[in-house]
Amino acid sequence: MPRQLTVYYTSDTHGYFSPVDYAANAAAPTGLSCCAASFRKDGNTLVIDGGDTLQGSPFTYWLSRQEPGSAGPDIPAALMNLAGYDFVTLGNHDFNYGREPLERYLNSLSAVCLCANVEGLPAVRKTALVTLANGLRVGLTGIVTDFINVWEKPEHLVGITVSDPVAAARSALAELKAAGAELTVCIYHGGFERDLQTGRLLSDTGENRAWEICRDLDFDLLLTGHQHMPLESAELFGTHSCQPPDKARSFIRCTVTVEDLPASPDTGNTRSPGSSADTGKPAAAAALPSGPSAAAAPARHIETRLIPAGAAVHPEMAAFLEPLDQEISAWLDRPVGHLDCPLVPDSPIRMAARGSLIANFFNQVQLWASGAELSVTCLGNEIRGFEREISIRDVVATYIYPNTLCTLRVSREVLRQALERSAEYFDLDETGALRVSEHFLRPKVEHYNFDYFAGIEVTVDISAPFGQRVTSIRRNGRELTDSESLTLCLNNYRASGAGGYECYTGCEVVKNSPTEIVELIMDYISCHPEITVDKTQWLHLILPERASSD
Image (cartoon, rainbow, N blue to C red; front, top):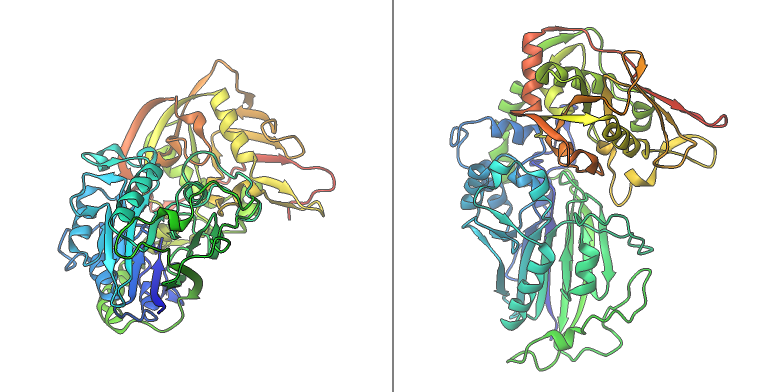
């Protein structure tokens, strides 16, 4: 008789619990309370989250500024409990506020946290075996990208080890099979390193390894995240995979049907986009252990669908959030300073090509805070911008990352390599119009990996090949020489080499600031309530005659 499992899966909610657009201060069909309104739980249902819950919204920024316990119980955990989560894994951003808030969250969760490649957190387990009401034995594990070791502040990882996720998943899978799991599930806070249509390698850094996991391991279901890439019903090497977008804009509803019949040799779901059916991966039947239910491999049918969050709200979550939302809204709208002009965002390609006063302002703050000679910053994929009257809402909705500031000593060659990486952002379409290159759009949208410099005037020739586009780097009216070194302030994420900027990793660290850049912006506004924004255009593009920057 068929046995069925329903999974509701979210990932990368980034603190978006309420149906609110914080930048616009308006209701929006997004947020975990909207997703959870559609969850229907019974004894054959699991509700699962893929991590990055604790950071990423003005809500979580406000929470991080409260004294522990002053806002009541651990808020994210309380909301996850109301939503009915059974299992979660950790995301890289869940470490951003330090070990103590992370452990408080984990200890307050009703859900079990599975993360097989993280050790040192007592509340984290490697595997779980669940027997549903219909008797189906489901084995689960979780893993997270080990690039946490690159990105995270060392003090946040004291006593914590983050190891290779694929090796940990392999070990966990063997344990689950030995325990008699009939269906195996891996919750992976990571994404795909290859194009899912062609198999083309998109990134070989190791940050994302979902393709490798599907190819080399034989999980039945791989729930992915991290890339914010909406994906449903993908079949790779016999493993079914999916991924929801960020900010709880949609969730995954997964239906698994298991038939207690021997699997047909030619129905093992071994197709793979861009590859042959012969993958070298063991068949599911061979992977099951001998035991009471392993005499024959049950046939599985898995379907995943992306479901929009919708406008309905989980009533208990809404009641819990209402007083918090009112308090946060009032806090966000407090005026804190005045600009000489509004800083209005434009399309990402226009801001990159023509410069952005928002980026100039952030660099202005960083130069003031660090005393460095040069500064570099980036902008989020979606930003609010600033009116003349600056509010806290403007700041936290425009500089959206929990970064700190680092000052490096850099050579002209390091600057050239970094500028060449940013110059890869530009491409031309078939009509000659300037567009964002695929390097910054796939496998996920990464406008935040284009960097805006201040303190050097740079000329870039778009018609030249990648790696040969930077034609001039000038400071104070003259070309920089190879023998010069300068101090450059940048966020700790970029200083780690992330985003394709490995050129920074060998540079001398002059100074590290423990203060988050959002706080530095607030400090700058406090010290300069009347602000004149730097209006220099630091980047100049040379476009082919047929090209247009519009």
